[in-house]
Amino acid sequence: MKEDKPPQQHNHPRKITKLSQPLIYLLVISLSYILGYLSSSSSSSTTHNITTSTTTTSIQPSPPSSSSSKTTTNTAKSTSSSIPTDSLDHFRFLTRCGKPVSGELIRQTLLHKVYNGTSPYSEFPPPHINSLIKQKIIKGWGSKGAVFENLIRKVKPTTIIEVGTFLGASAIHMAELTRSIGLKTQILCVDDFRGWAGFRDERFKDIQMVNGDIMLMYQFMQNVVYSNATELILPIPFSTQSTLDKFCEWGILGDLVEVDAGHDFHSAWSDINRAYKILRPAGVMFGHDYFTSADERGVRRAVNLFARVNGFRVQVDGQHWVINSN
Image 1 (cartoon, one colour):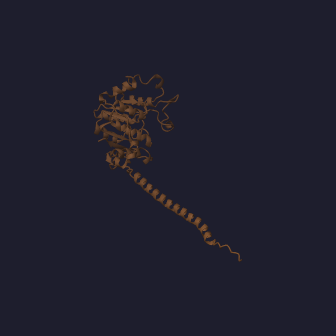
Image 2 (cartoon, rainbow, N blue to C red):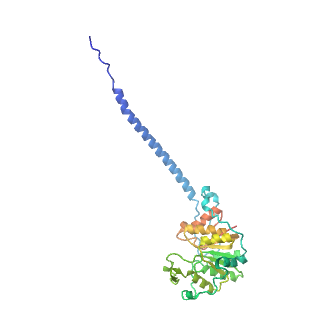
Image 3 (cartoon, rainbow, N blue to C red):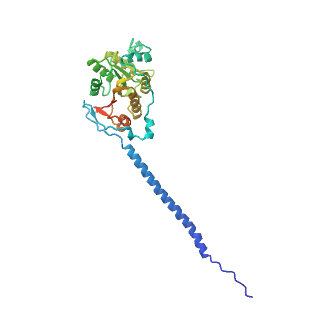
């Protein structure tokens, strides 16, 4: 009997299948990667475009001549609609202000709350300080700019609040201006009177230090005494942020508020927002150093952002910025 042969097995098609499966997998993975990359690039481009459209709303004014004495509008009015709604919480300063104190009672109110009812100029200077201060050191920056007379004649303030006063040069100038036009204006000078780290290495080596206590406030007071302005100028020797919050709570408001303390963005932003809360209706807020090398990283950035959020115009007068509350 002829032996039956086993049926032949055709292995070639199975070999082709084994080779093609990894290739298909590789093609699928490659295609998925390419599609994912393209999708990511598209999303990144969209995000970049959104970011760009948000940040290009900053105001870019050009500096006027520093000799200008006329207040001119320099930025277009912009409202808070340009600020993303979910970011507005970062722009709110929620201290609740008390009932406003009348201008005639402000000095007495602060003497009671800050100085236990006694003028800080009483029996000034104390004996241990007398030899450490000069008859006068009245130095500052932009302290006699035309903006002071322009605004004082316009507003005729009962109360001026100066945020950042240093040696009192601009406060003394404002006291002289108010007296010259017959006003009895109270000027409140808010400053911690510590200066800044290293300031005595520059042009203020005459300011002495005793056991770490800088004689800045004493020299400020001596400058006021020398200028015969002790009834017009009152120092408030605490940090600007804590003092402005307290002024708000106590109802201490100003017709003119000058903001000229810290010049970095965060300090200026904090001071401007707090100062605005203590500005009387129809009052004016202003400050120095609108045009500096810091540009959009300092005072100017803070002022412009504040104007955008609140829908104000920023005006310039020489090197000063001006914002009217109405």
